[in-house]
Length: 233
Image 1 (spheres, rainbow, N blue to C red):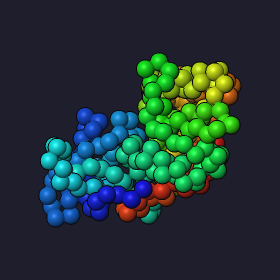
Image 2 (tube, one colour; image 1 turned 120 degrees about the horizontal axis):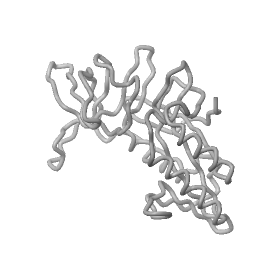
Image 3 (cartoon, rainbow, N blue to C red; image 1 turned 30 degrees about the vertical axis):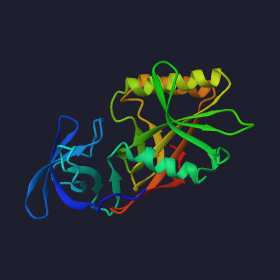
């Protein structure tokens, strides 16, 4: 997935009210950018971080910049926009680039199912059970090389796991796909200390047949694409 508009470098001044971030552009201007991330962003909202913003000239948008990336001092990147994984994954699914799901040729996004829920992707193919795929963006890392989810309590995430378990009970296939938006991690684990209820719901869902896939991403100021499969730590 390529960014629509070339990103520009800035310095983070503060992130507040979850969806707002004050930044200083390289020309000295201070602006407010939209932060498309409802999580805590633990470890990713420290003032002084180098960030990459996507400008826009859409008259319908009040904020003219969107916060997309963090550039770490070690040369790695973190993607902070939680809408990016779905866009990048949709392209990968259509292109058959996720081996575990490549047999499915029909890819539909945001399909209603369960109890007033929407599945990120419903995959269908004649002769195969329907496959319900829920996607989570992973940005937390508290240990070198280890990505974790979630970074805050997520009742919505727990609900999604229960919905997936219900789909397997009906004879469908269900997949929980964690997409790691960090280039400095090669392992994944659930942050059970942050949200024990989510970890418990995942274990129950897995026992019901819900599959887990973990993929990392290749990130640059030009694009974000799906990378390789990771192991659970």
